[in-house]
Image (cartoon, rainbow, N blue to C red; front, side, top):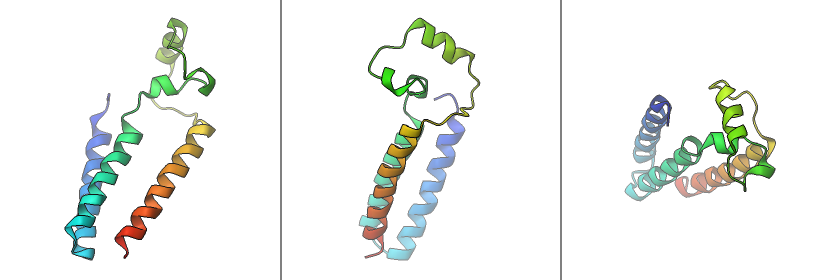
Length: 107
């Protein structure tokens, strides 16, 4: 990962959420579930090879060519374009996980 600051910030916020869940529910099991889901969520957002997935989604099943590498190297570090497919998949997966986590925490 080129920028570890995003990872550190995410882990600090996860720790804050874990403390709040621990104080609110007084359940070690719920704190551990929050930790596991938080780490998986952070890993799903921050760790994928974005250069690979920033290509057209129809080309995800092929290797990155030299032409792709050159095009990706010329891009700036900030991605202005968000793939609609990626947005739909992330919204569905993370929305459902957050919903199930909330049901578990609020029992």
